[in-house]
Length: 255
Length: 330
Image 1 (cartoon, rainbow over the protein chains, first blue to last red):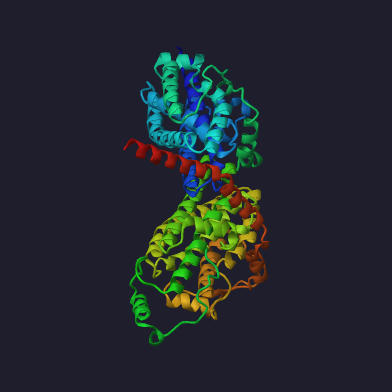
Image 2: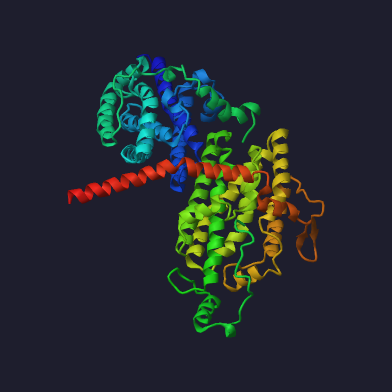
């Protein structure tokens, strides 16, 4: 791969990782003060904080590779919807607490093996950001898995709510492990992992964990995707105006 | 101050001579600055006063997440978003230690939550004001956390061990909160004319409610006299308010902002600022539930609790199932 194309692929990787963290962090942060128990207010703030921190690292790196002087904040607050590269899953609305937990679980179960694989990236910065983030993602997955099992195998109502959330969100999970040509190019250069292998690990993990949670998914359900290449659901167009509002209404101001 | 007008026994302070031996021994320990721990004997009034004060303080931290949480999704930079998230998370953490401190006195967190949601327990009046612009996040850190620190620093010396220790930890975090608030204000006053206007507008709206946080003058209050005798309260409301004004006015001057009080004047004799009278009618209206956001704050807390019932019950159901399976396996 030519150096320019390689940089372009790395830029896309950094945006995909950064935008996933940013948009999910933005969604999760909206729970602050509204969670079902105080410990969850604290835990959700913590998860959101980790994710925004990761977004800041990935987007900062994306700006450097691009070399046009855009900072992490420029990329987060002044980019248009179609230039966002997060997967569709993370932009889905918070819904009830069950939806929020299932969305997080489906994401974390991919995020951790993805980050672990990225720690062996041939690109030093990618490996370093991934190593730092993987520590946080380990804790996120532990928490998510614990809730999926306890609430899936909890009361009738908690089971029904978790199953409903899973039915609604499972179709979005496939995009996480679906490799496009950028992923393939990254894997070939050693900068990124083989998404097919991560997909196999993801499916194994899901089979085991969902069984324990007494929850089911349609393994053959059609995958809803597009976010990675900028074809988003309608949801993103409501997240960005809120998130970007101050920056856009006061051009050039320093905060 | 996150606890306002906390009622005590209302009976007036007893002298040592009037006390039974057990109570006298208790009071002598307080006078000698020895901490009282949860398992020790204490007068029922002391226990009840502390439960009221600590739970009110905890509720304030919990409700206090809402006005600031209102700006997390709109924070203008990633760093500001992280700082605000960390701050609101700290508030929830403070609520948690304070509920734990109150639990040592024999009240459960569920009972306290029920009292908050039914309107029986109060929380600080300040959280019933709206956060309308980003500058309000700066003003809350600077003024509201500043006023809270003024009150909480002496509470580190409170006679009740668990409350005193919770306060030591909380104070460290609050001073970081105040600095981040002031830093937001600094950025705004050095920014565009619109940003500076935003900062002045926030000061105009938050100044008087911040002074109200200390509560009305309590020089003649029997409740405060008893709390002072018990080492729960160290300073009068007026003393703390004066200290806050004296500390804050120079900070406003440094920012180049005007404190919205035409009567504010340096008094060279007292080496302190004279300032205008707080509108106590407004304060009592807010306490009665008629502030600008009382209804919204309580509705948000009730919704969080009610919507989360299935989550809490689901976890309990799982724990019961696990227990049954364990018993069956044994």
